[in-house]
Amino acid sequence: MIEMIKVGRTYDPDITALSDISFSVETGEMFFLIGRSGAGKTTLLKLICNMETPSNGLIEVAGYNINKLKGKDLAHLRQRIGVAYQDFKLLNDRTVAENIAISMEVSYKKPRAIKNRVRELLDQLQLVDKHDTLTGELSRGEQQRVALARAVANSPRLILVDEPTGNLDASTTKQVMELLTRSNKAGATIVIATHDESIYQQSNHRIMELSNGRISSLTRGGKA
Ligand SMILES: Nc1ncnc2c1ncn2[C@@H]1O[C@H](COP(=O)(O)OP(=O)(O)OP(=O)(O)O)[C@@H](O)[C@H]1O
Ligand SMILES: [Mg+2]
Figure 1 (tube, rainbow, N blue to C red):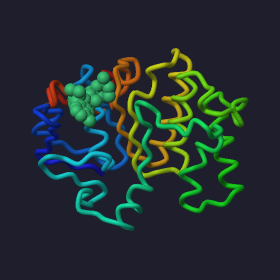
Figure 2: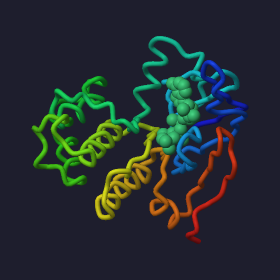
Figure 3: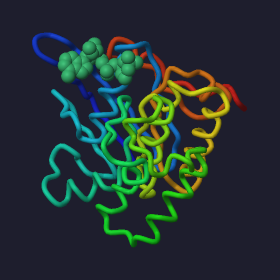
Figure 4: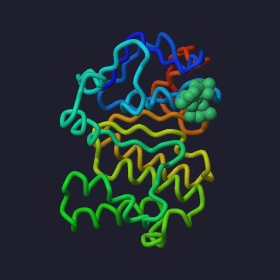
């Protein structure tokens, strides 16, 4: 689903956010990205969804060189990637339901299907009573879950989540991971950037650690 070959990203004047990154993520995998603050996790996720362009190297997503795609082809691929950003990027003057519905509306899903899916996600994330609340009025932990619901709503093939449990307590973290696991079991490939050891240590998923913009280890969670 994802292949990177010798990818680097530098920012002016001389910040090297990522260098010499080569790895791949298989279709259907749940893959964790860890590393200290500033290690390059968010930059890597943004490269995968074409929010950022690499300074060098090759990035393929679902078999396409994502930096060569243009117009309709790029829009089509982007529609199949759901992203939950570290800073959420919600539309704060719209309701929770409207925010979650966006990706489904863009791909012309039927109003009834959208309504049902929004209800289902709010139910899974214990946000049913926030359906009509403006997202700007929510707590950070609630906004974080709305961002996640929006990312998974349209059942994308690839889901990128940046720090999905940073503002959550243990039981809400569990609900978030259950939702992601459900999407993964339904066939989605998922990449999760996180500082939260509790969500990957007890799994057998692959874990890639970044350190100063380079891959420092590629291991598997401790569960046999
Ligand atoms: N737009 C930008 N302009 C300049 N430097 C940037 C930009 N985006 C990221 N960087 C730098 O690149 C490095 C990697 O940042 P990145 O946000 O990818 O780290 P991170 O691993 O996600 O950190 P955190 O755990 O704090 O979210 C940092 O040194 C950061 O300051
Ligand atoms: Mg980050």
